[in-house]
Length: 104
Image 1 (cartoon, rainbow, N blue to C red):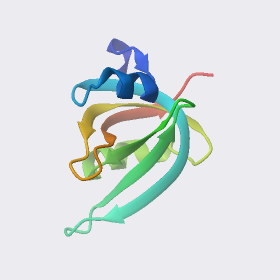
Image 2 (tube, one colour):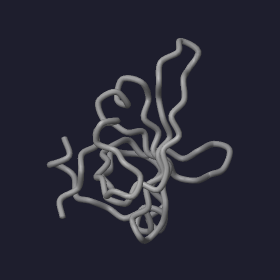
Image 3 (cartoon, rainbow, N blue to C red):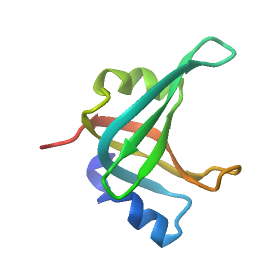
């Protein structure tokens, strides 16, 4: 999937006004907050900073299990997912569908 998408920047997404659709973003992982849902399945929110801005990446249980081994705070990663606008804050979020270490 990630091969089909051009990598976009957080600033470009914000400036474009897009709030939906598939996107790919590369950036530095600045935080990982792993949690458990009511069924005790682990999921996480990941902060990703691409140098133009930061986006919150939500990785729900199925996808979190697959991408967790590739994440480390301070390392660069490429995330593919579905863009969303948080209904409370109005900020952009990314619902992760894939993640791999970014090429250097």
